[in-house]
Image 1 (spheres, chains in turn green, cyan):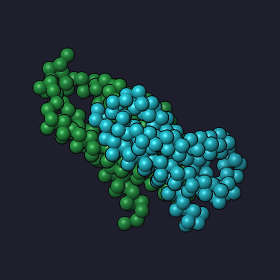
Image 2 (tube, each protein chain N blue to C red):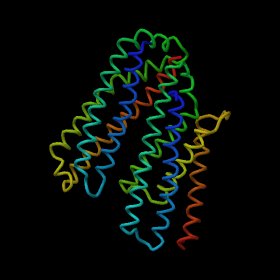
Image 3 (tube, chains in turn brown, blue):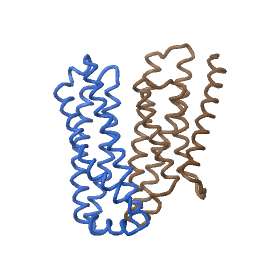
Image 4 (cartoon, each protein chain N blue to C red):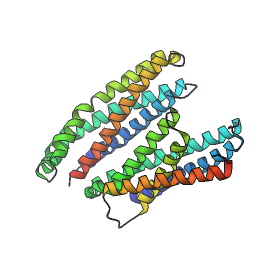
Length: 165
Length: 151
């Protein structure tokens, strides 16, 4: 396996762990909140999921910089100025800042989990899509729309599942 | 670029990212209800060693290769500001990183046991760790822009 293939496989594993962790973290959190409190067992499951999520993030970021080195050494430096890459980096920064704000308890949970889910799926989509020619700000605009949609969907799911208004 | 220079640049980038991750974990752990002092000692140590290593390898790459091979190309290209602004900022502000990381390391290793009850000290340390993290992330993004301009 050459370095490029290794980086792709490792990067995909990191993203899969992150997207899966964010999704199942959200589902488990919702299930745990059904009775209004998080039991020690549920708390343990959630902390395992968040650990997996962080491992995924670390793998994705380190392999992401691996791509950076690959582009640098193979004369593909122009790819480092791709608006899609910078939009993805911005989304990852939002993800990291959001995790920090959740840990500091400085962000409401409804916003924190919406940002986490949208950012992980956003990073996945930005990594996959090809042949789109949008500007950096256009990508961020779509991301913001995504955040608003996810906030709406999650509040609807909570209202239906938890019976909250 | 020779193989050894490629290795130096790779170490500079990857160890820098590891330093960022270590600073980030230090900051996250400083906000835990029960402070994991042992983990904090390890993460602050990794961050310090990583920034010093990134400093040495980056400095070596700059002196031996960048200054004579990459810099002229960027300055004569369409984005000379990348060197004139971003690289200049990176060169000077990077120096804060090992020092700030050392401050965090010292406080955690010497006063780690008091951080749990001394909230003022913990918050002040978290602020230093946050500034370290912000500078480190800016350095990494600056590196991306510089490499992107080195066509």
